[in-house]
Length: 117
Image 1 (cartoon, rainbow, N blue to C red):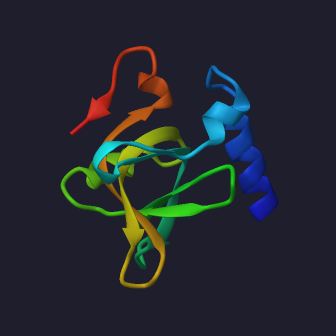
Image 2 (image 1 turned 90 degrees about the vertical axis):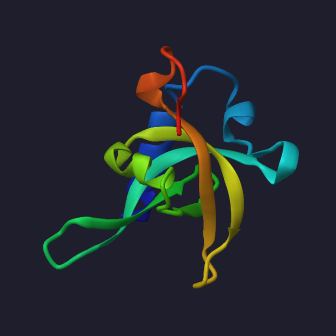
C-alpha cells in the first residue's frame, strides 16, 4: 500500500511544471517559514469514518501533520490533492513532523492564484 501511495504522489507531482529537483525540494524562507509540496492524505478517522486529522505526504517519504487551526482546517476538502503549503514546521506533542499552515496553493488553483488564509 505504501508503494502505491508513493506512485500516486509522484504521478500527481509530475503534473506540476518545472524541474523535478526544484519541485521536490523543501524550501525554507524568511522568519522560519517552510514551503512543502505533496499529497494531502487522511491521518485519522472517527468511528463513523469522518476524517479527523490530515497530513501532507511528500515525495521524499516525509509526512507533515497539518495543524488544524483556523488556517489548517481549510485544507480538509483537499484530501487526495497535491498542494504547496507554506508554514512553520515543528514536532507535535506526539513527536510527529507538523506544519502550522500560513498559506497554501492547490493544483487546481495553480493557474488562478493562491488559496491563503
